[in-house]
Amino acid sequence: MKRIILLLFISLFVAGCGHKKKVDLIVINANIYTVNEEFSKAKAFAVHDGKFVAVGSNRYIKADYKSDNVLDLKNSAATIYPGFNDVHCHFTSLGYALLKVNLRGATSYAEMVERLKKAQQEHNLTCVLGEGWDQNDWTDDSSMPTYDRLNEAFPDIPVILTRVDYHATLANRVAILQSGMKDNGTGLFMEGSGAQLSNVTPKYSREEVAHIVLTAQKKCFEAGLTSVTSMGESIRSLQLYDSLYNSGDLKMRIDAYLSASRSNMNHFTAPYTSGRLRVSGVKLFQDGALGSRGAWLLKPYSDAPKTRGIHVTSDETFRAWLKWADERGFQVATHAIGDAANRNALDMYGEILKGENDRRWRIEHAQVINPEDMDKFGQFSVVPSVQPTHCTSDMFWAAERLGERIEHAYNFKQLMDQLGWIPTGTDFPIEDVSPIKTFYAAVFRKNVDHLPEDGFRMDEGLTREEALRSMTIWAAKTSFEEDVKGSIEPGKYADFTITDRDIMTIPERDILSTRIVRTYVGGELVFK
Image (cartoon, rainbow, N blue to C red):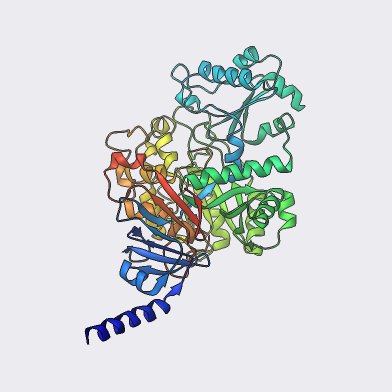
């Protein structure tokens, strides 16, 4: 009788195994944040054909699924989240930035020149390109620089240096003259006034640009990113992306916003999706950046009473682009930092959007908002797209620019309350590509040195749950993709990121030490 019972049990077990569904990947014994509506957790999931097919307990997944590829995290500290999503970046620019001399963190003009000299000598450069300088970090003189020292250090070869915010450029006299422009006496160019300097910069072949794009992708995967929204794209870059997707080399999910060029206006008649590429909107500008006093303010700068910043795009041109986007079904994302820029963008959006809607037009940065204008985000259903590390980069000098208006700046909590959700990003390569730094800055309002000790205006910080949602499900919602990605749920793309620790529970000071262990896109391991 015992033998009969044993044989019956074995036969039932074998029969049960035979009914298990074969899948491509199973993950078990994991600490999983699904980031679903309930913000529930799970221990295991199954992936097939690039999507999650089941999420739940170890027992459930083991009972119903089998795979030749099983990842057992053995109940370690490793933690899984939906793939991180950066809602505002410049994807290819990240690759280009790696080819330039890094000037970030330089504490003086002299240190910047020394870095440039060293790079020129080591690589025998015939044109020196640098990016990331910030006069606010210079301890000897924080005024906007001129080209005198560059002319002295580099009298014979062109030097072109982009400010950290990409809204100002410093060039030496050689570069200016070789570009075909007249010497302006300072070498400093604000906003797009130095565009002609591109005549001097190296020209890359298609193969070289492809390598630059894939280098950017590698950096993103290393940071745990599986999706990005890339701002200011051209026809040429989109064609290259398509080609790299077709060859299987490009795997990143990209939501592309077009640059506001005449060629784009004439070429594109409607948004489109091609595989993992979504061309969905147009990127517009209202003003420049706060650090270079290009942000457009309602009243003069507190530390420069003769200027209110720069109104970059005329109302006539801006309105024409809004009409173009409205007629063709494109989203709009407008760079607006100063309170005048935000007011103007919101009011002009309102002329078309009228009231509540589901167009998901966006304001990028939304740094300084006059209290009279805050409710307009809710009134016109405008999505505030913010970059928390901008706040922690600016916080030590922003009050000098704004005075009492600092109380109306970087107000993430108030912005989130307008629609009940808020997406975040980095604006890389202007800021570091790391979503972990985004999370830390959003929640604790401190920089990488854990300063200020009590955080910067903590009443405007997000909770850990809000911060995680902002770079996963809310980021997906920004691009109308909340039904296909942004959470770990059956039927959604199997995009997920594994860290070596749980950023939702570990002590604050340990968060910035978090490592990305693995990154998956569509169930495929793209970084380990």
